[in-house]
Image (cartoon, rainbow, N blue to C red; front, side):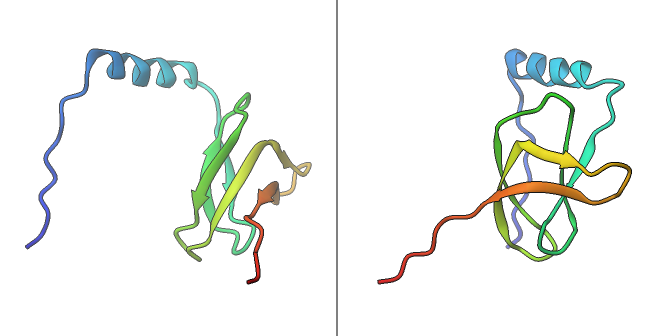
Length: 92
């Protein structure tokens, strides 16, 4: 039996946060962050964003942690360079 999506009511505080974020990014152009493995667009980044995000590529299905501060655009090229933090592999 298929699941049915039932929309939920958002609290006034949550709506205010969503509207505030929308207003803060109005007029700014998001820059794409691409998967370092396959080049597929994973997410977008606005100027001033910092911290780490966990993302999963919908194309190659790999998961990665992206450091937004280390994210840099290389000149006018379409290539995007990001810092990837992968969990260390342990051997037993």
